[in-house]
Length: 175
Image: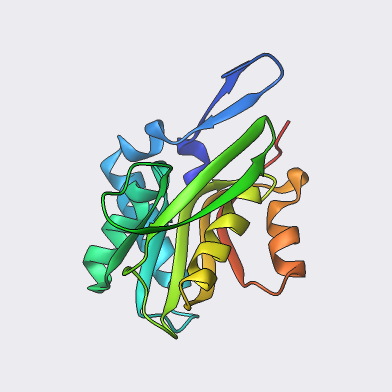
């Protein structure tokens, strides 16, 4: 199955000049969603990890299904002030401003190896911040798996240059 056929592209969303890659058309189709989860699991077999983490919020959709099937703990990387216990925080740059991401301080143990899953990578700023949170927590990033890579925005290339392992299921131009 070609998962690319199940991604809707929306012009000028959320603002003029953006071509938004919409995963809702993939996840509403049970066959496409199941195939997507299967492909993530197959790619994850290349890596040794004991926990799975995802970036708020669309990453949760994919990572929670993979976590359930693989019987691995699932770690939430959330926006500021969304986690109730003590957190590590990191501020990072987005294409359109800044943001803060947090992780519970007790989510990762020293030397945990974490597979990071997200729906999409563009420039890689959010993904890099996620890695820094895992590393601040004394864990390490086993690899990233993205459903969609906006290849001309360079996010995957930037992560690879920094020594991270990266997989993605679908390539789209970012413009």
